Amino acid sequence: MPVSLRTQVGIVGAGPAGLVLSHLLYLKGIDSVVIENRSRQYSEQRVRAGVLEQGTVDLLTQMGVGERMKSEGLVHHGIELRFGGRGHRIDFQELTGGKGITIYAQHEVLKDLNNARIATGGQVLFEVEDVSVHDFDGDQPKIRYQKDGDACELTCDFIAGCDGFHGICRPSVPSGIFTHYDREYPFGWLGILAEAPPSSNELIYTYHDRGFALLSMRSPNISRLYLQCRPDENIDLWSDETIWQELQTRLASNGWTLTEGKILQKGVTGMRSFVVEPMQYGRLFLAGDSAHIVPPTGAKGLNLAVADVQILARALKHFYSTGSYDLLHNYSEVCLRRVWKVQRFSWWMTSMLHRFPEENPFDHRRQLAELDYVTSSRAAAKTLAENYVGLPME
Ligand code: FAS
Ligand code: PHB
Image 1 (tube, rainbow, N blue to C red):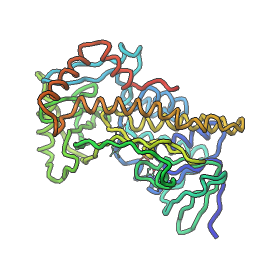
Image 2: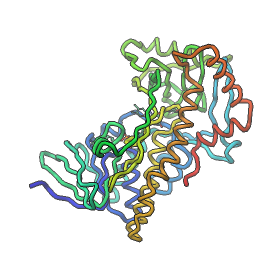
Image 3: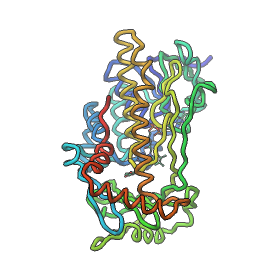
Image 4: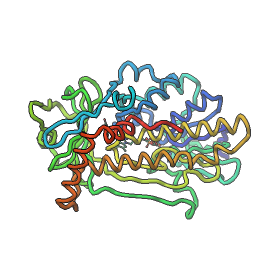
């Protein structure tokens, strides 16, 4: 006989989507259990996103998990677009009425959320195995899993599939329900974490004949940098010297130098745009990367996951307070309006800043004209700025 547990909302995945949802539900008086197959240590060390939109920062602060983010995060009020060896600043403060972004690593957000969940008696079960979801077309969906060798069954009112792109929730929905929208890009990003003080106070996105590069950071002593590479790039072929040399070339600008340092971590990530519609089936609701993937050029992945679960938490609260399914029925529709605007922005930033293998000279000149327009027209710069700091929630 499996060990039987009961909760209101079963959450698969303890990434940004799962943990923000669990804590939001707690703050609304709703019980949840988070089921995670990795260890807490793994998820709190995995280097991923780095940019928090204004809305994400405000939410984490309102949730009471923003103290370390406020003291250690780096607030930025602009970015630089660099092409032709010259930099052009996009002034978020002026263009968005004072909004900005905060550089604070995703794994630091997860540490803060895990600590908050534990401090408030939350149930986040790490290192579970053989997770599966069942009966979500009925009113008592179940999550089955192995924990410390015991077979367990968690009966819920609802399941939130926050288990990322490679999770089990999306594939558990019967075929024929979902429509998939997918675009793979003909390049990836080679990313490094380096023990080097950032050579700029703000992010630099650069368009170069040899390909895209991005200067970001994690702290006054740690730089985070990326360069466009083949989608199937073999990271072992890239010595630290070669990486720095390529970054120096692509980021070069008169009178500016890129400070190098010891590379602490390096890896290659592929790039795709992906959306599944609808984002729900029965009492299973998908949120975050389990439902959509954006290329990281717009720094949106984590922020979109947080937006999804804000909408889901509001709908669940409405159900438990009134018994009405209205907001739950509208979950996908409301989420997808934002998802597709974020997909558009992420695709646009990616298309403007990367070299495409199959491009012709016209495409190259058109990209340069796009960059020239964005950095010389206030209207064009404003559209970049308002998307980058985060569109308002519905
Ligand atoms: P996540 O993938 O973060 O979390 C899903 C969780 O579910 C994980 O903890 C996983 O272990 C767990 N899980 C999976 N299968 C399970 C199962 N069967 N049972 C139980 N648990 C299961 N976004 C940006 O905005 N900027 C970036 O620079 C950026 N860089 C990235 C680099 C990499 C290498 C990757 C992979 C992603 C990057 N992203 C970036 C996107 C990333 O930040 C995601 O958008 C964000 O993590 C989405 O959060 P979640 O939806 O919670 O999914
Ligand atoms: C990062 O700091 O990891 C980062 C910043 C901006 C992006 C993508 C990644 O667009």
